Length: 204
Image 1 (cartoon, rainbow, N blue to C red):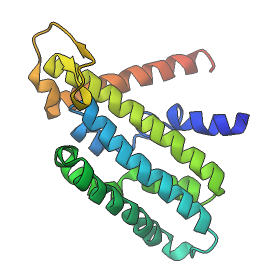
Image 2 (cartoon, one colour; image 1 turned 60 degrees about the vertical axis):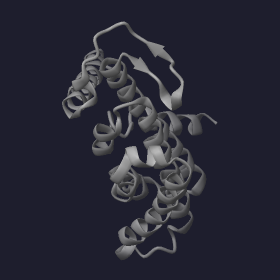
Image 3 (cartoon, rainbow, N blue to C red; image 1 turned 120 degrees about the vertical axis):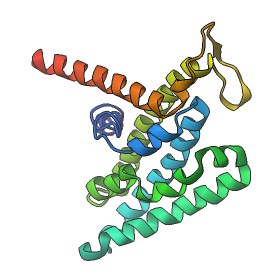
């Protein structure tokens, strides 16, 4: 049980896709104008990551090493197509907001990276745990980014039509534009790296 929990937590902390592995920055910067968009992007990526990790792990002994990457991409693209069509049918507004970044999940470095580094070498159960951990880590960062940018850019956080919090400030609209994304991720990365450096200096 301890190993299972360790594998799950690793995807949130040390191997966090954004802060640990520095993968998936394009969708992170592009879609986190709000918490709602962050949740939508994370949900789509999580479905693809979990399903592809499980299938690739189950078939790993039958996939020739010489063609493994093309086969990985075919498997990933299958689940991306399911996400793309489902979002277009059931959540058209979010589908429009996320735009091209839904089909681009096919080449998301997080998904291909976990397939190559983990699912291709481990059994189905632990590949599922790895996917769940990475998906949770990705979700937390997207929601954090979306929350910071949304509240500073609009003065409120209102996912899916429900206002969670309002702040009496003059909204800085640049926060929900590309410069706001780069500024936010730069500050968050600096904080994370500072904490890592402090931990190393203490011998941790």
